[in-house]
Length: 334
Ligand code: NAD
Ligand code: UFG
Image (cartoon, rainbow, N blue to C red; front, side, top):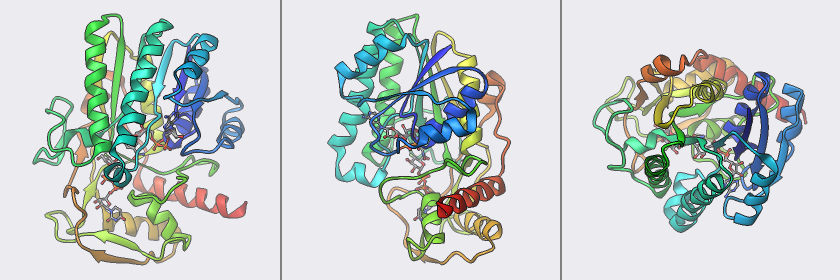
């Protein structure tokens, strides 16, 4: 089976490419390299033995994408490409709607033109908004109470995919709602390496540990949680990548939606302690006020993915921390 990964040089896409190649899938990558580096391809080759064919093409470049599909003859697309900085999306909403929503429409038109009928889409737990409960299941209503344009783009794209699948009965759509991806490949060669200033917890912890950021600012310790800090479902990126492989094997007509999470919540302070334990170093932090739009506690109910895809997350927070530190050490050695 030949698979195109849009955004495949990025954090989650590159890990997924490796897991797919390992199982013998033919993988090609299309990315504009806005938030990733071309050198990722060599690292994928070093780990998997195969260097995927690469196209530096933007989702907004319809002609360029048409050429990719004419050459590629793909069976399936895994659509990772998108902008994901929540804060920036509030400041530049049009950039986010254009890139993520218009980009996806261009991709779907191109797929239709070239007879490609299978797509897996990278969605997010953010589409659930505030449900008033911590444990989230796929059948909950989505799209209400989303607090930023980035999250809105994920919801809108989910709705577009549902409409397309309704109009085209042969279309096979799988929507994967990721919780909080963390960790790195155990080789230490690839991991999260954002080109801009991060706003997610784990990349910030990484930059505090290397001294690039002075200290972690913990957004609130007065939530109704185990220790007052926010609780999230952190999933190791290798587990997440394997979730995509499981989804590839179980594509079916219509729309299938799965949470990809561990089902277990971890607080910010627990993440700090886990990082300190794995690195043997103190991580400087201060408690500051709550961040607007943050929820107290959120975690996945992962039962549907287990039942239908036969997939469950196997790696722990400790694995994620050890792999992240290994990745940081490998970066330092260069
Ligand atoms: P990433 O930024 O590392 O990877 C995304 C890739 O898409 C980058 O390589 C970027 O250069 C590329 N890209 C962006 N816009 C493009 C365009 N117009 N044309 C071509 N390429 C383009 O991000 P990631 O963490 O690997 O996330 C992958 C997907 O998963 C994204 O859609 C993201 O929104 C979604 N997601 C991520 C998280 C997370 O916390 N990492 C959580 C939920 C959902
Ligand atoms: N946090 C801090 N300090 C920081 C950064 C984060 O205390 O500097 C805390 C947050 O308050 C939260 C936890 O760490 O309690 C996780 O925050 P992230 O920003 O890493 O993740 P979120 O769960 O807030 O958001 C992420 C993605 C969104 C996605 C959402 C889905 O950033 O894109 O998960 O649940 F929509």
